[in-house]
Length: 582
Image (cartoon, rainbow, N blue to C red; front, top):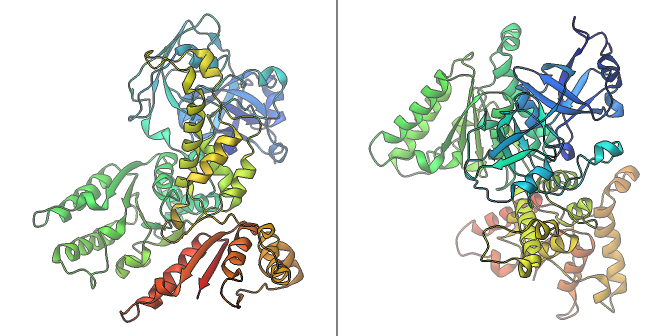
């Protein structure tokens, strides 16, 4: 692989590097990670400011690349920086030495339409102290946790007190002087309360805001981003690019957010169709509204049409009594068939009930691929926790890996609720020090505000996994130490359930297939239910209890459907212990 010297342009103060995504924990930090060869070519050291030019110019703090990136010509940028430079992953940018001047005045505004900010500008000044800024950029407040491998002088820049209990996206409205500037002791900082449209308001959501979906993002990029950005690839191969992708999975797993991130990263126009909103009362209104969205998207190509809750507008035609619903399904089928292969338009649909969608939609040529977005595993939950605690002032004892282990069965929405509840607990702790008659909170009180381990553990008791709310009786709090007189049964359950769940790789390596079911029998009151709850708690698994009275029905076939639904839900929130009582 050629080094960065070979990639240098005629101007020796520039190197040309390929853009790659930064790690989740560095999102919003404003760091550009480059190989040592690029540092040598530019004559800079870690902590220096560099200018990054794609379709637009922005600035970042130069840091050394990870060891695995040292031999390749890549610069790792987070989602906000990629948006600021208007360069997606895989594209090339020019990196050059930059001079950052002290700013006399910087004006910020919320970059999210629904957000109103009110707070001391002094706290904002401390959060962005010495960081390079360019008017028109989207920036993010950061928490009080600098990246570990920073040199001491750079670490101080990223150790500023957190501005809020969550990461806030801001637009840099203006700077004086213009160009690349930084905030110092003499800078006047203004924070406007109302939203002001940044240079590209859509870039507020990007791949950095979607955790635990690395494989899914890769599949979507192949299906959506490649056809929109490089349609000539498919022309050369002589095949039609994909027309549609169906995302399905439990509620709260991030299907809508993922579609928005794909649209932003592929620089496509984004059109949303919400199922219930498109239904009209008049004859033919719904079909007309659907046609208008597709016509507008075709005009504004490259574009993505996102249909949320598609099961509400495209149900199985043999199961709906009304003619209006059948006509709407037929109209959607016609529109999908009418998409020209080279129209630069892709349809993404999302649902949590794929079996309720008309079969005619689920075939190649309409929705070419179906992607299942399941409940995240432990590594995925760790990434999602990192996203939702990115701007938080976290206490020293907070261990996100520990929280990831404790939140089995949680989806992205549940983890967001957990972070919010923990933040509310932190606010409750400092409420006695707040004067409710004052409009602002003194900076010294804000400095005492942090989210600790005890706040997360307290919030964990109040948040139930959304996928389990219909069937979950309680989180088992019974351990082996609470049960006596059944030592033999406990040993067998440990060997048969707890060990395979805690060490699945050991069983796989030895070629042992663990048992799938256990029958507990004995007289009433001997602790059979207690044993089942204890094994779920000790194995750190979800617990679903079913009684025969819950399953039996007078209607033909309904009992079988109940059992099938219960096991389907148990698979969705695995690891799970299903207890069938009586």
